[in-house]
Every structure is written in structure tokens, then in C-alpha cells.
Amino acid sequence: MPRFLLSAETLNVTKFLMGSDFMDALILSRLQFAITTLYHFLFVPVTLGLSIFVALLETWYIFSGSYEERIKLKKLVKFFGTIFLINFAMGVVTGIVQEFHFGMNWSEYARFMGDIFGAPLALEALTAFFIESTFIGLWIFGWDKLSEKLHCLCIWLVAFGSNLSAFWILVANSFMQHPVGYAIEDGRAVMTDFIELVTNPYVLGEYSHALFAGITTGGFLVIVVSAWKIATDEDSREMFIRTMRRAVLYTLLGTLGVMGSGHMHAQYLATANPMKLASFEALWETENPAPFAVVADINQEARRNDSEILIPKMFSFMVHNSFSGEVKGINDLQREAVEKYGSGYYIPNDVRGMFWSFRAMVGTGGLLLLIVLVTGFLFIFQQSKIREHACCLKFMPLLLPLPFIANSAGWYIAEAGRQPWIVVGLQKTAVAVSPNLSAGEVWITLIGFTAIYLFLAALAVLAAVMFIRRTKITEEE
Ligand code: HEM
Image 1 (cartoon, protein in one colour):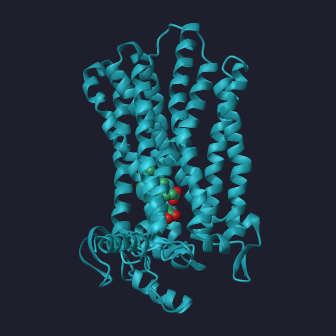
Image 2 (cartoon, protein in one colour):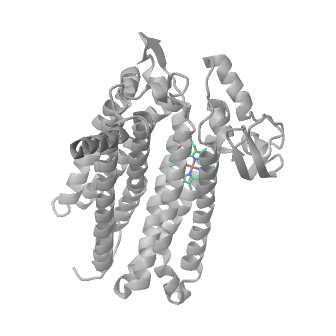
């Protein structure tokens, strides 16, 4: 009897893990991809933005004048370079896992899309990743072996390689959002025009927005680290005041760029993917002029907002730069999709999440701009008062999550807004998952990745914090 009870319990646990009654392989694979992508994208924007900042810093160093100044600037380049390296290592490790998902969890997608998706991924490895990895090695070990200018060129090539790598990945992602340059042959998508794939107008919006998001994130990290050093490290204060001023200008460029590119990309979505646009604005009915909902109580089941606070005509203005102009609503777009693709539910299944993610992203962008302007004002026009504000600067690291929140919210909108499609109009997410995958298998990797990633993140943060605390930027060699 006890043996029987034991095996029944074991069976229940196995059923819970392997069976479909708790969560199925599809939902779990989506969850796993979301977790690993959002985690990976904590490091990517820092790599994109900080690589350029370190390259600018090294250029400043090689063209600077006095001997004392050069010693301190070199230390500064190595200081931010080390933070960059810790982050870069994490980005690479977590990025490799991403590629395995396609074969393991999404084999139907890989079968259907491999011909197209494989090309930019291969080019990413062959062009961008090879440049990054070769020149990062030369940069790390070449300090006393290469000429100063050649050494500086290495970090510029690392920055170029990193940003090129993001470009190729976004070419692949843009195809999923807005397929171009393909034909369907024997139930598979095949590439007919590589140039069309690379010049997909969707890439322009996604890439410019991601690049400026990287500049904002990398620049804000430098602001936060500099603020903390200014407040806590008397010996290094003078040099970090100088990086602070440069980082403020750099981050200002990033925040203005992210706002401009985001706005233009949102306007472009009105034609490229109106369902996504209407969903993150929770506009259920087509309107002309369309109002902008500041807040809304979204009722997805009833396909309406139960209550909302609206700014009249504002959504039309955001889309058409004019207070009149039609914006299509979710319900009409659903009817159009049924006519085009047959019966089905074509509305992203988390309109509420997308609506609030969009507000989180834009709100965080506004807050970052305000912080950068106030910090810039303090460091450019109120230099004599910096000491008085030292206690506030000490708390600036608490603001560090802001750009990361905006980045994660941005990706949530981009990917949740593509649903129910994995490749818009061509393949649904539900049929893209590997057919032989069990929920139990995905549970194991999901728990494993989450635990390892948490451990790695704690290590990376600890290493960076210890390094920042201990390193001093002084004239001593
Ligand atoms: C006025 C401010 C902003 C607007 C109008 C805006 C607009 C958008 C839109 C429409 C998308 C969806 C793109 C798609 O699905 O293809 C998006 C995605 C994204 N946003 Fe923003 N955004 C703003 C601020 C920010 C800020 C401050 C950050 C980060 C610092 C950020 C980071 C991202 C990222 C990482 C994505 C996903 C990747 C991409 O599409 O490039 N955004 N944003």
C-alpha cells in the first residue's frame, strides 16, 4: 500500500510537471524565451552605449596634453573599460543561449523560417561578432604592445562590431514583425531578395530606437557611477566631475534620440502593424479624430475600456501630426484580419500589459530626460555647489533601474504586440513550437536558466560594485 501511494504521488508530480494541465510546452517556451530575452537585453544596451562612450573617452585620452592629465585619463578609460568588459561577458554568455532556443523549443519556426532567419544570424557571427571578439582581445592585452592610436582604433572597432551585431539581429526580428523579400515554397519561407530584407523599413525604426536606447542606458550608467564616486571618493572627485559632464551630454543625445525615433516608429506602425499600435493605445473602435487614453480600465473580454481618461484628438495628432485623421481601432482590425486570414482571434492577448508597458517606457524616458537636464544644470552652471549636493549624488545609483525598465517595457510591447503571430501574417506562434517538447522538459530548463542567470547577475553586480568602490583615479602610476 505505501508503495502504491508513493507511486500515485509520484505520478501526480510527474503529471503536474510533464502534463498539460498546469501549463503547456507552448506557454512555457514563450515564458522561457521572454525571461532569457529580457535578461539578455539588460546587458545588450549597456554594451551598445558604453562601448561608444569608452571609445570616445580613449580618443580624448590620446589627444590630451599634459602628462598628469594623461595618466588620469588612461585610468579613467581602463575604469569604464572594465565595467564594459564585465557587462560584455554577461551579454555574450546570455546571447548564446538565445540561439539554442530556435532549434530546441521552436523547431517548427526554425523549419519554416530557417532560410531567412539563418542569413542575418550567420552574418552576425561572421561579420559583427568576429570583429567584436578579435578586437576586444587586442584591446585588453594590447595596452603596452600597440601604439596608442592603434589601441584606440581597437575599441572603436569593438563599438562598431557590437552595434553591427545588434543591426543583424534586428534585421531578423524586423522580418518577424514585417516580412519582406520572401516567397512561400513547399510550406517554407524562402528568401527572394536579400537587399529587401536588409532595407526593410521596419529595421530603420527598430534599430535607430535600440541604438539610442543603448546610448541612453550606457550614458546613464556612467552618470550614476560618476555621481557615486563624486560623492564618496574625494581623491577621484575631479576626474569623475569631468566624465559626468560628458556623460550628461551623451545621455541627453540618447534620450532625445530615443524619443524622436520612438515617435517616428510609432507613426510608421500605423501602416506596418496597426493592430500593435491600436493595442498599446487600447483604441478599440476606429475614430477620427482619435483621442489619447492617459489611463484606461481595459476589458479585453468585452473588447472595450470600462473607463478611461482621454485627451481629445491627441492620438490622431501623434499619428498624423494633425488634430484630425483616422486611426483604426482593434475591433475593425480584427474584422479585417478575419477577412484576410480566416476565422481566429488576431488581437494580442495582453492589451492591458502592452498599454501600461508603453506608458512605463515613455514615462521613464521623460523622467530620464528630466534627471539628465537637472544633473547637467548642476554640473555645468552650479559647479561651486557640487559639494553641497554630494549627499544627493550618493543616492543616484537607486535610479539606475530606470533605463532598464524602459528597455524591458519596450521589448514587451514589440513582442507581445506581434501575437498571435510569430511571423506576422505567415506563421502563428501556436504552431511554431517544437512538436515533441513536453512541459516537463521546458520546466527543467526554465528553472535552470532562471537560477543560473540570477546567480550570474549577482556575481556580475558584485564584481562591478567591488571594482567601482576600490578603484581610484589619481595621478600616481
Ligand atoms: C517618447 C518616448 C518613446 C517612444 C514614443 C517609444 C516608442 C516605442 C515603440 C512604438 C516601440 C515598439 C516598436 C516595435 O514594436 O517595433 C518601442 C520599443 C522599444 N523601446 Fe521605446 N519609446 C520611447 C522611449 C523609450 C526609452 C526611454 C527606451 C529606453 C531607454 C526605449 C526602449 C525601447 C526598446 C528597447 C524597444 C524594443 C526594441 C525596438 O523596437 O527598438 N524606448 N518604443
